[in-house]
Amino acid sequence: MRGTTAELEGMAQRVFVNVVGFTDEERHALNLLFRISGEQGTPFVLWEPNAPEAAKLAIIDGQSYEAQVELEHPRNANLPIIWVGDDPHQRTWRRFTRPIAWPEVVQAMDELFPAPPDLVLDFDELDTQPPDPSAGAGPAPKRVLIASADRDERLYIRAKLSLVNLTQADEAENAAEALELARMNDYVLAIVDFELPGSNGWDFTHDLARGQRPIKKTVVIADRGGMIEKLRARFAGVDGFLVKPPHPGRLHLLMRDA
Image (tube, rainbow, N blue to C red; front, side, top):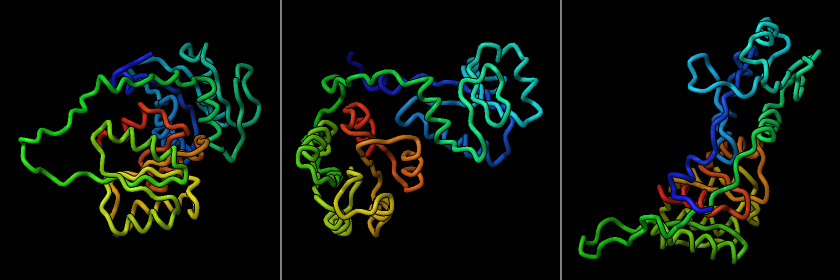
């Protein structure tokens, strides 16, 4: 199946979730994960009475006074329930105890509402025409850093960059080379393999993105990535997190605004 960029952006349908009870701190943690959820999987949204759609899932704090009221309300009659606490309700689909591992809760939600298969982006339909030579010199070309020890991976990324007119790319095979290039050049985008030799995980990506010459956007690709990795990526200042092999459509969406 092929789709345009607009279709790709809208392919994952949001799921409204009725959250019942919980402390302010717990709700803050859950809301943060909801905001991150759409980056790789299904976007989850807190349901409120004025929401445009009905809730499709309820997360209930079994220790809250609202729990029994919500369980008896018709709007929750057929919803799967994620229960937190003891004595789970008979309709509970998944139960968790405190302290709550919220990334595991959201991963369970991803299992219940998996994102649809990725669309294959048809790059031939995109507006990727080169600049008009008659328009003058214009601004300096945008420069990109590709950091990966895998030559084939670097070639793949370079090819995708060319489709959005990002043809000025430098390559690094290890962390030391990447940091040295970032010290010497201004980059609008860095695409970094999380397993880059010599790197120390998220500390390295943070240092790379926030160096003396800050990089506008940093994208990390990794062999695997669950909700915990996505959360760590967000705190490390990473703008995009993709699982290998990076889907061409998702990669394009991250590159096009660089």
